[in-house]
Image (cartoon, rainbow, N blue to C red; front, top):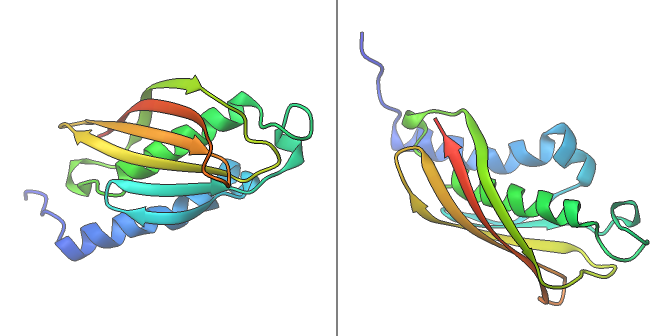
Length: 145
């Protein structure tokens, strides 16, 4: 018997479930991330300021910023995913350019899926502080099979 395709309602339900799944994973839960926006191909993820995630008590470690860029890109990829194509995923590539510093501020990452292929999703992500000052940009290639 051939596999049946998921209904649009089930596709929507699964896409929406992602915004609950991400913050509940052990690592993301530890960080305390939350979604400010979760729309198809367009998400905003917030990391509340935590002094222990900084280099000096004020400025986020670059690895924390990269983690959040990766997370926002992945969320954008899942936000409009066709679950009939699969549900195993990973980041294939992440290129980060640091252009500033977030000082004692939440980190706000805006992820956009800009192109979807058969397996690969290409995302652009921006990280900014609470005032909207950009601190990093990223290009991400994400794969879901």
